[in-house]
Image (cartoon, rainbow, N blue to C red; front, top):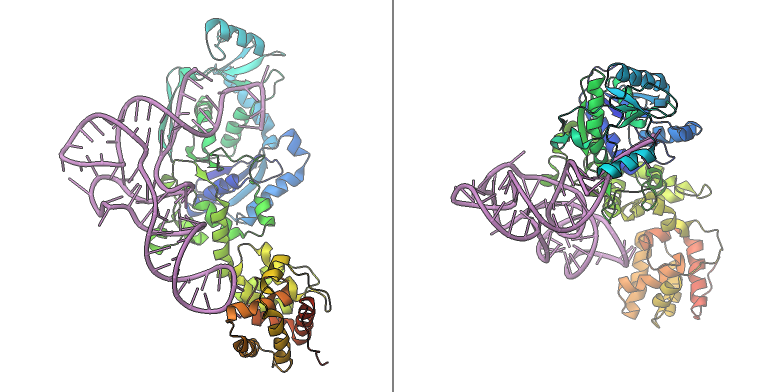
Length: 476
RNA sequence: GCCCCCAUCGUCUAGUGGCCUAGGACACCACCCUUUCAAGGUGGCGGCACGGGUUCGAAUCCCGUUGGGGGUGCCA
């Protein structure tokens, strides 16, 4: 049980966990851990979400993926907002009893008409002193006091709002149910939240919440509004237009460490990153250094290209064993893991995401004797020179006696190509296309070594035939 | 409409009055290395939105303009 500050993270379950939410969660998490406090997970379970427990589970899984684990002593929850329904109502009644709220029977239409008449923009406080009680169709409204409300924001400093610009907002609907704003504040009070760290979009509603905290007789929490994440159009990331679901990045083979590191560099720079010439920083350092006061004030574009670069760096940072283990999970079950392990070191440096692994090594796992599917452009280019087919035929001869190590295979190709006055860069092309079907791939001789003598020679022979040349027969 | 926030290379940022000839990262370009492609190395391109102040001195402080974003429901 921790005794420090209590940070709340309150995502609404929608079946997808937003990358922006992930960043905010990370902010709360870093602070909760460093300050010896608690990360309180609260699920804003709507009617819709209550019928889909898998959505809540999705949030927990997503948090776990980025290292925010329910098993950690700094983690509390999940709490469901619906569990506090009675407290929401009780708080509303208390507000009414204390004179901080009043009932109103105007319909939306009537409010609009009155606003038009008086040239106002919203509700005009019509029922403030009409002494109405509860009743069907009566909404409970908060009596916004006169004066100014100042929000002390850890990221932005003091932000002040004229109370006269805030209309008497609804607390309880005509059917008696509480609105989100009220529920939110009551939950925070009930859960003894001390720090509210969330996205900037909530800043304009914060004065209402702070007034509620005060009217309910509590000291408001420390507020912090971090900038939102935007797309290339500079619009808030939206689920419709943009790739915002964390699960989509997981499926694409992005690494949690890379995602976490990248997300944290949006709006904040780890100290020492500039001197080091790298923004790749382990979580331990981030947790030790992250401060709300250092967070930028402007929105940040979520740049997948940079994420990809981070991801490539993290893949390269893996130990060989770890890489084989992680990358192996991307492979079809039928593919021989030992064979993959042999080539793995040669592809580890060539990846952006783990998902690209199968395509890089598939040629090693085609069934013996299967026809190679040549990429047309690769074939045309590799076999355009007239020396290509004859050279390949000579290579077959030379490889018949090879000891079948990468070094030997390379030396023998070099001996052959010398007769044609061709450089290695060019000479390897027809061999590569013949064996892998493509013009690019892992280092050639290492690939051949792993593929094995028989299958390699078979593919070379087939290619010479396909190129219209005379293939030497290969002895059994 | 009203309210709030924001404004440094294409992007993410460092910068809190002199250390700025504005630094780093990603992207891009060139060269080196090289067994294709990568990785790595070196170098390059590229920015303080604009206009007024304040000051000996402003990317940094103030005001305004412009531009962008967000909020403003008996949605959450």
